[in-house]
Picture (cartoon, rainbow, N blue to C red):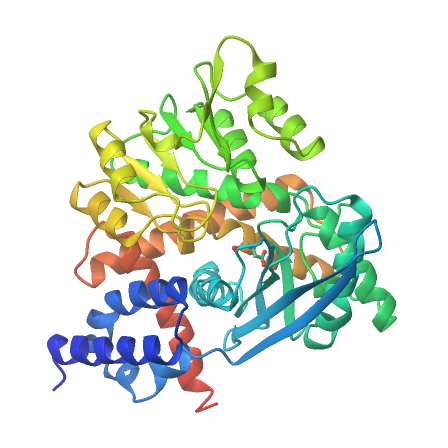
Length: 452
Ligand code: GLU
């Protein structure tokens, strides 16, 4: 009989081997470690999952593509960036996951994101595999024409690897509606196909789903509300700290306001804004979405209630709920200690892996409800899957219908994570619940489909 200790020893050995074979990819190691760390109870309870090679296959991408992306800036200078698409797991459906354009992008970052996406997508219950891509291109300060040329060059290679039944990219950091438009245009031109389902996050009016831009932020607030409800509390009237000021942060703020909570902060790489009256979401959209400016401009225009704190971190502001919505490892142990000292009750990750492992453990030890990104930010990819469904049926649902579906999906994810954690002896531990529930769905499909 396999005991939990045997299983743990095997998982630890596997982790060491994965780190050896994938050197210099700390974020990928971190993401794998977190999952393997929670799987021992399910492997011990269900011997079929302990089959040799299953976990090994799960941790090895099905395919990894790395390509050159040459482009010319407005002065005619040639730049060469690197493009990536990691097609991690397609047991449940076509590879699905965003593209990130940011100078920090490398293979390890894309692999961590792709690995997390497998479990996140499985949790939605919607038949999508896991993948991720992007480039080390820095869109910051680039003209619209430069962005277009970059996207066209990127797609000139990527098009041969994707398709509505194969791999369906979308946005992530640095890739929003404008970039998806240029990418889609180039795909259509090269292939001579109107293949709406090849990309999600498209514009309203040419195949995009209502509520897709809002979905990640709305979803993570719904998840935070569900965690609070589970503890007999209500989100209404609670204060919240939100980091970031991109798509996820903006719609997190919007949903917090809609549900009667009070979002106090948002941030960018230069510092953060704290607004005692609550963030004015229309001004935030104007500064960040329309003008593509810096967050300090929000404070300059908002008046007496807001101030800009250069170089600071939002986690020093006392609040009931924290929604890290910027990027990986933005909330460390010191930040977590400050939040706990200030009485935080719930943390929901709008970004992917924003909380360091030490900070997660600190929250859990302190009894704070902690919703990992795989569950809490799954609303974005879930509505992407709904966009694919609408494209397939050549139809467009109303915003009300999509929002209703989103609410239903987030509530189901919360219940699944909560019940799975209880079933495996870790009540209230959403990290364990999300990892095991996502794993069970993918593992069942992989076992049924044989050794491939
Ligand atoms: N980039 C988003 C995520 O991290 C969305 C992916 C998608 O819509 O395919 O889940």
